Image 1: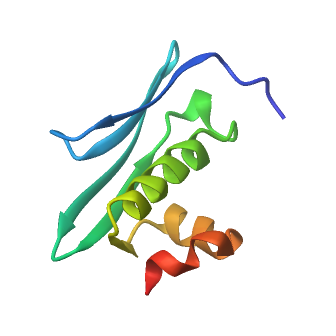
Image 2: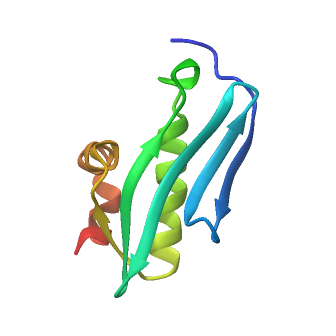
Length: 96
């Protein structure tokens, strides 16, 4: 497992409807849209040099916590998010 590069933390860019995580090696994003009381997560992207460092999970947790705080249901369309939710049953209430 590679050492995690320092990041500035997850930033919620509401205007762009995405969560962002910056590193010296690139920008990671989780993109969503909100419609009819639900948050549709449709894309997660981590540049190849930053893969397998837990950054996608960090953004996904931030997005799911945001959905929880806003009382939004979550519709995962991104394959990464689908897999994450299967592994983290503590977020299953957001799917109902």
